[in-house]
Each structure stands twice: as C-alpha cells, then as structure tokens.
Amino acid sequence: MFSKTSAALKGEVSGHKNLRVAVAQEKASKDHVKGLMESDMDAHELYSYWADDHGDEGIASVAKSLLVLEKEWHQCQGMLVTALRNKKEFTNRLLAAEKNVSDLHKAFVKAEKNEQHAEKELEKARGKDPSKTTKAEAKFSDAQRQKEEAEQAYANARDKELKECRRDLRKAWLEYYRIKARVYEEGAAAARECAEIAELLPEDVDEGFNDTLKKESEQIADETRAKLEKMRHEDEMHISITPQHVHQQA
Image (cartoon, rainbow, N blue to C red; front, side, top):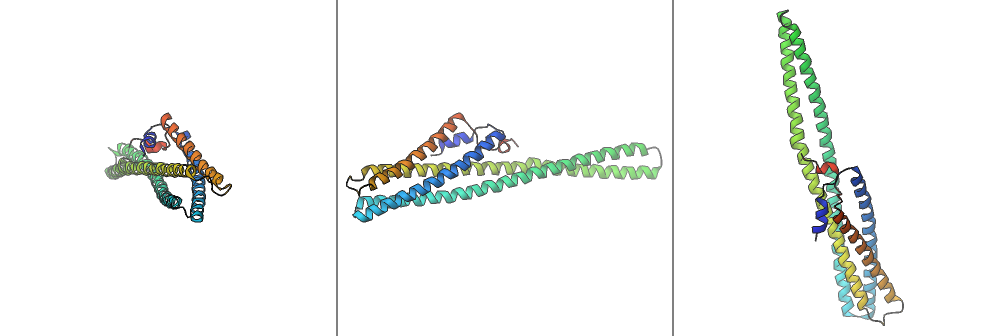
C-alpha cells in the first residue's frame, strides 16, 4: 500500500523550499481529510436512512460496511494524530540537541583558546621566578584538562546524541507519512464503495434522493482520486518532504 509514497520519502532533495512545500501540503491535506470525513459521514447517514425506510437488507448490509469503513477512517485519524505528535516531539529533541552541540562547541573553542593563552604564559614564565613558573605550569595543566573535557563532551554530543536524535526523527517522519498514506487509501476505498453503491441503487428511490446520493459519492471519489493522483505525481518527481537536517549524515 505504501510503496509509491514511501519511495518519495527516500528522495534526498533538501532545502528550506521543500520544507515550506511540505508544510503547505500538510495543511492542504488536513483540509482535504476534514472535507472527506464530513462528506463520508453525510453519505453514510443517507444510505442508512434509505435502507431503514425501505427495509432493503442489501442496502442495510452496505450501510453497515460503510460504518466499518468510517470506524477504520477514524482509527487512522487517531494514529495520524499520534504520529504527528511524535514527529513534533522528535523535532523538538533534535533542535535541542543541535543547540546543545552548538553550545558545547563554543565551550570547546573557548577552552582551546584558554589553553593556548596558558601555554604562552608558561613560556614567558620559564627561566624566571620558579614560583611563577610553577603557577604557570599548574594553570596550563588545568587548561589542558578543561580543553580535553570540553572536547570530549562536544564529541559525544555530536557523534552520539545528535545522531540518535536524527535517526529517531527520521523514523517519526516516515511513520507519519506511512499512516498518512494509509488514511488516503482508506478514503479511496470508502469513495469507491460509495460510488459503486450509488450506481446500484434502484431507480424507484424517492425523487431527488438518488441524485443526492450520487452527488455525495462522486464528490468523495473525485476529491480523493485527485489527491492520490497529486501524491503519485510528486512521487514520480521525487519531491522530498523531509527537512534537510533529517537527511544529514551523522
């Protein structure tokens, strides 16, 4: 189900422009999902009403299947919300880790400069007052230790913590868009079901009611097909919707 959409996620096109495109696409997707949910529920209510009114077991069975689809749809929505929350959480973790690495790098650079300064002071003190030489040696030794500690802290944050955050965020993004793809597939399934049922409704349905059913079903189907076609087109164009820093190699 996710093969085509997942392929796009593997693209390595980077840059802020793609991130802005992703944000805009995500907003449009949310609006589209909301519209589909409302249309789907309206259509389901119409089917249920018609089935109850006419005592048609076939249509009643269809209404039940639509209810199952609707529940699956809502379940996907819940999964999508959870995945979005995880995506935001890991994004914040990565930003915090990047800030920490930046701060530790500044501390390392400062410690390195302090070591260089202490070394120069030691060179000046040598051959002069022994007590001053001893103090200078102690300061230089302390500066060396602080630089080594700062360098180690910076290296650990850069090579371990930052790498883990990037890996976790990448997983969160992939999971989010896999579930998102599933939501659209569920929507497409419901749309196809609605369209097929509307075509099978008998001609003696209450005047105007059959047209309403078909209009609702066709709207759901058309909107979903258009969205899926757009997603597939973006897959073919290899447009990445993953932020630049997620793709950086640790």
